[in-house]
Amino acid sequence: MNREQKRTGGDRTMEKGIELLHGHFHYKPLPYGGVDGTKVVCIHCKGVFSYHRSTSSLKYHLNAIHSVDYSKSPTITNSGESLRQTACGRSITLDKQKQDELTNAIAKWIATNCRPVSIVEDVGLRNMLRIATSDDTYKPPSRRTVTRRIHELYEVERTTKAMALQRAPAVALTGDYWTSLGNHNHLGVTVHYIDEQWELRSHALTVMKTEDGHFAETCAEHFIHVAQQWNVSDKVSTLSTDSARNMIAGATHLPFEHVPCVAHSLQRSVTVSLLNSAFEDVLAKCREVVGHFKHSPASAAELAHQQIEHGQKESPLVQDIPTRWNSTLDMIKSVRRNEQPLRDVLTTQDTEIAMPTTAEMDNLQRLETLLEHCRDVTELLGGEKYVSCSVVLPAFCHLSRVMESSDDDPAYVVKFKSTFRTDLKTREENANIAYLKIATALDPRFKDLKCVPRAERAEVWATVTNLVKEQRVVAEQPVEATTSEPPKKKIALLAASSESDSEQEEDSLENGVRRYRAEPTISTEACPLQWWSKHAGSHSRLASIAQKYLATPATSVPCERLFSLAGHIVQKKRVSLSSENVNDLVCLSNWLGAEE
Image (tube, rainbow, N blue to C red; front, side, top):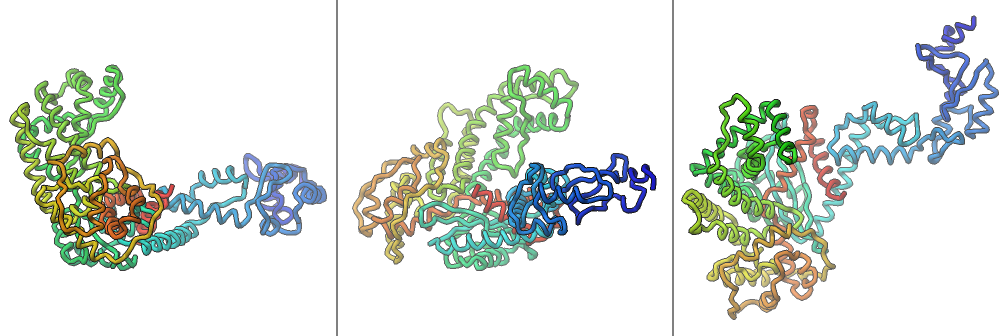
C-alpha cells in the first residue's frame, strides 16, 4: 500500500469508524471524506497522536494520563465510576447515576414546560447537553424512556396529592368540559381545600377523555367518578361550574352543593346591558377600526410609526371577542389610548373606515369607567390562591352601589346601569345564596353581614348555629398560615359596600357563635385564614366549618386556566396524544409548575 492509500483510507482497515484499543482511539476523519490512517484521536481527551502500526505509545497515554484499562471498552471501564474529569481537562464521562438524574430532569422539564417528548431527538438539545456535561459521548434518553419516566413521575406526584387530600377535612371542586384540536371531549376538574396549616391549596385532579354526550345525568356521573377515583366522595362540599343548562341540571343529581360561576354571570350581565344600548354603534365602529389594522400589515406598520411619533409605546390594538371576559373593555382602552395615531393613519389612507366622533369617544370613556368596576370584581373573584367565595355577596353589593344612577348621568348611561342591576339581581337570585351567606359570615372581614339585608342576618346566624351543633370534630390548634392574599386595591373597594351598620341584637345563638360574633372584624385587606390560624383554638367547632366554606372558589376560572394549559400541550403537532398522556402531562404541568 502506498502513502496516498494510507492517508485516504484506501485500505479497508482504514475506513472511517474503525477503532483501536477497544474503542479508546479512532482514526482522524478527513474534511473531504475518509480517514487519515496516520493519525488517531483519543476519545477521552480528544488528543491527536501519530500512528505507525504500533500501539505502545497509545497504551502508555491511557495508563499514564487517563488511568483506564485499554483491554476493556470505555463503557466497561467507566461503569460504576463517579463523574470524573480527565487529567487532560477536556472531557468527562457521566456515570449511570448522573445519567438517571439528567433523564429525570429532562422528563420533569418536558412535563412542566409543556414541551413535546420528541424534543429529546433534537440534535441541538443533544449538543447543548454534551457541552453542559462536558461528555462528548452523552446521548439523551429515548422518547420511550422519557415517556416512562413521566408516567412514573405522575404516579409519585399523584400519591403525594392523594395523601394530602385524605388529611383535608373538606374539599371543593370546579369542573368544565373542553374540546381538543383533535375534536376529543375532555373533562377538567380541579380541587380546592384548606389544609391543617390553614393554607389554601388547589391543583388539578384530572383532564379525562369523555365519550358520552354531555347530558345532565352523564355529567353528574363524570364528577362522581372523579371523586371516587381520588377517594374524596365523602369530603366534597361544593362543585363550581359555569351556568350551562346541562351543568345546572346535572348538579341536581349530585350529593353535594352547586355554586354557579360568578364570573360567567357577571359577563352575561355585561353582554345583556350592552345589547340594544346606545353604546352599540360606537362599539361597532371600534370593531371595524381594529379589524382594519388587524388585517392590514401595512396599516399596522404605519400605526406603530405614528405611536412612536406621538411619544407612545408601540402596542397592537385589541379586538373584543364575545367569549373572552373583559375583551370589550380592552378594545375600548386600546382605541382611546391610540385615538390620535389612529386618526392620523386613517386620514392618509384611501379607506371608508371612520373613527368614532368626539362625542362618541366621550361615550366610550363613560363605558370604560363602568366596565372597569366589572373587571375589578371579575379578577378579584377569579383567584384561586386566596379566599373568594365569601367575597361574592360583598362584591355584588359593591357593583349594585356603583351602578346606581345619579343626576349627572345621561339617559343612555342610566339605561345601561338600570339594565345591569336588574339582570345581575336575577342572576344573584339563581346563585347558591344560602351557601354564600354562610361563607360570608365565617369570613372575619365580612362577618358583620353588612352586604346582607338586615332582616335576613338573624336567619344566617341561626343556620351557622345549627351547623355548629352538628359539628363533632374539634379542630386542633394549627400553626400560622402563609396563604396568599387577594389584590389589596380591589378588595379594598368592598369596604364601603354596606347598606348599614350591623346590629348587636341579643338572640339565642350557640355560645361559640356568640363569642365569634363578638370578635372585632378585620380589615378587608387582611387574610381571613391567618386570622383563623390564630383563633381556631378558641373557636374550634366554627373553625372546622370555616375550613369547608372558605375553601370553595367563587368561579370556575381554575378550570379555564387548566384548559389554557392543555392548549399548550395538545398542539396541532400533538393532536394524536393518547388520553392518558394528555391527563398526565396537564396534571404534572399544573402540579410541578405550582411548586416552582
